[in-house]
Image 1: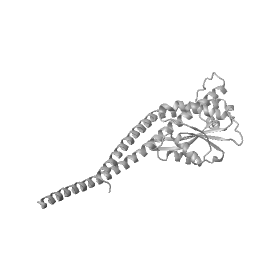
Image 2: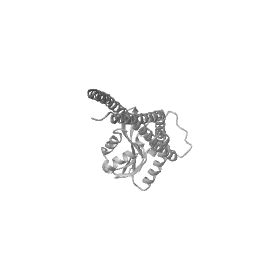
Image 3: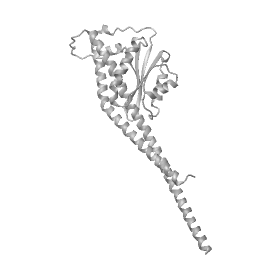
Length: 285
């Protein structure tokens, strides 16, 4: 049985781990709250862009005639976590990817170090691996970097279609993995949107307007995917940290109980040793 000093050391180590986990929980909570304040605006802007695309296609239906290459290649941008300790978050995303119907024709661009490691271990066809953001402030630069990478890959003919796969944030601890087609936009569906009663004033060529809207559609789609994923990742991390705290508390209670028992046994042994020594001394006299 371990002595009281060893048990005391283990308890102190657990206390240190407890403090670290609580700090991680606080950071994850802060990140979730920051993203949750942004998400309604991001989602609303995303809808406004789609509505604008629907308006231009409604009034100029010929713009919806987009030819899709035969035997097209589809690229999926998968938004995983840059950091660990978020439960099965990355595994669920990659399980979803491997369950896609067109998996044989798919290539993947993975954002997030942890997801990349898992994807490589599964032998998935990853053509580009990028770092993911660890805070809300880091999303802007990641969107710009990813956009540049996507345009370069598209220019090289690496893919004909682009979709994003991310964890749609619902509330703390709950998310739903979804796949959204980004390029080319689903012109047929967008063109069927109900247009506003008042016809919009257009001072540019319709083709130029649509091109600008498609660019904005790409940017907001990537930004939203990053934000949704960051919130879902940290919400998942919170659940993992809550479970870790409970396990640490349980282990500390067990060790404290054992420590008290061992310490009492040691004190009893010391008292018996003192009494025995005293009796041996008095017996000699």
